[in-house]
Length: 629
Image (tube, rainbow, N blue to C red):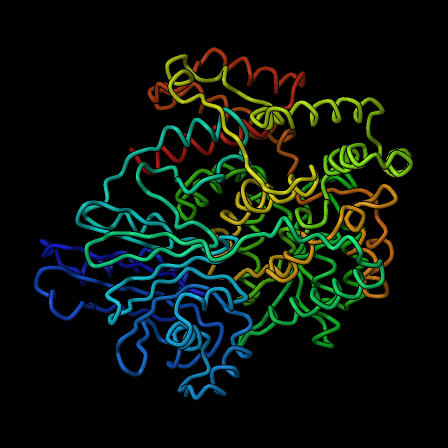
């Protein structure tokens, strides 16, 4: 797990390439405090005219020796790699390559990655089970190959001009290059605030103009003249649904893949711990890890309030700790420090943060570092694979109705009413919305509250536009889950998760994002996800005799959220009022200040809960102050 940077120029540089790559990699030291490297490359016959430079910061997780130093060459010096991530199945690939006659001189996964590319070319990306962002210079093909993992867990940004291509793990590193011009991306800012935070990462843009992310599941080929070709090497298969799969076969297959996913992600030459919220996903990972390791594992849990089952899941966490004899740690954030923490966050995130939850998870990451646990497992994406959110029931009801499966529809509705405290009229409203949305997919953007009124008319008129989220899945529940996985929910989660953990030099691994598990879950009919009025059916069945029963059978869902609505009405009230009425905030010429204060008043008097947009406004203003003042 590391930080990478590099650049290609087609003309002779008027700056010191060594000094620039040093500045770029120094800005990433938190991603890789253990080692650093940089190298100047060339196509062989254009060294005086152009330049190719790689830089690297290393966090030692696999092979703690110098054998994992980067940038790394192959033996013939025809390939060079700078790589961030972990390929969890590197031992299996190494064994396969050894049988083909390849010889390895280290125990690092980086050498396996480079050798895999040497043997299989860009097809190697299909074989990797892991998370990565990498650049490989192929001297023989006179190309630079830049690749990113299937789900975009590892970040990789780039900036391109007519004569330069610059890439790095974080935006702050790009800004160290003299060719990169810094400017706000107002369209992205507008979307972040006017609609909903979930739509912040539906494309490859960033909050900085002309700075983009390498697309997930893809690689870019760049020739010596900076011509680019982008290829997608992986995607979900909407046509493969296992309609004849039995309950027992589904449960056994899910359990098999899930346990193997956790097993692979426990591979490390340094200590490994688990994030433990008390929910199904993190509990499943913690308990399976305990059974694989056959010894207690260290766990970290956030407790953010006093409302049982909403902000405090300690009852369930305690059950897991007892079951696994975990070496546990509880962390309770202090909201009085919220503004200071946001400034810290922005130092590492470079972009506004989506929700206040990440404020708390950042504080947990700091605790993890103090406990000397460089690798942490998390439960991200379990809800998106297995229908864990409240509105997923609505999509399932709609699919049952469309299929004409009326008996099952009535049964699921009755069980849903029995198991969940939702308003009775919710189903009718939801079904009508989904039906209208199916006719006009642009209505999907109206799923969440919008805040167009907070912007001045010129800004709203300039950037308001219809956005359509696309999926090739036919059923409404599979369609919604695929969008959450690849376009809104998961991408919006992975960005702050990476920045939070890497800010503390911690590698965060997500067993639910093993591509084999993802492919299997998306091949399952709805009934394996929602049954008897409860979500995550196949996970619950697969975890029998592995999880504490009170967690495995719990019907509610809390999630790791913060009581920001309360904080903002009390301890942070004066700070927020001062911010939205400050001269700097008004000078942005983005907002209708009167409407902003009306919204603030609505939240303070309790008539509406605007904690989400207030958090985003705080982030945006402090981001402007950090990067543009």
